[in-house]
Length: 256
Image (cartoon, rainbow, N blue to C red; front, side):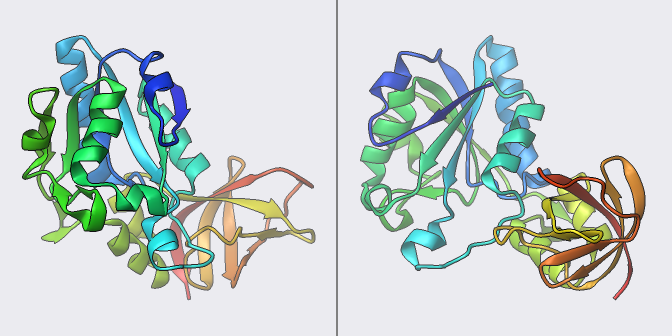
């Protein structure tokens, strides 16, 4: 997978890519709803004999527009990148979310970031918006494209009569409902923690972590019990690492 970290000039990237079908969205969590959007792009690309890609944004718009400090993510950018690569994407376009980007008109956004990157078809969820104050959306994207590319809208994906969303997953983690969160994610929730000595692991600030409680986890392929206390994970089996990221997969809740 080729990763492109874009600025407000996409001309140099345009020379490095083939025409593609690209899924676009923030995609925090890369959950089952997000995967519907990405797999739609992949299927269309395979059918048309094109490359397929994903366009995402960093940081979260709330950091820039609302001044949120220490924003927490289900999938910080390196984790999101890893998951998208595992899905088989050919390209990953990372667009820095800045005040300048937020001020672009929908037309300019389309000209620069869709047509300007040789995207032949854009796939997005029904609620995706772009451009100044989110005035661009999937209802008007074909008008803005003016024949340069086509688009598909993926309708709301539900589980249990409720929309699958990053917000819903965060709420489940806040309540310690790891099993339910994992169902919506389509995999176990993972935090790449830091060794903190004495069998403890430190949760980086940018992760949205489960509420304090006891969980069945898998650490470096070994299953066992762990306790979340604030920003720490007490791994009862001990941790042999002194440095580097330690993947902690949350499998199910035990007790709070």
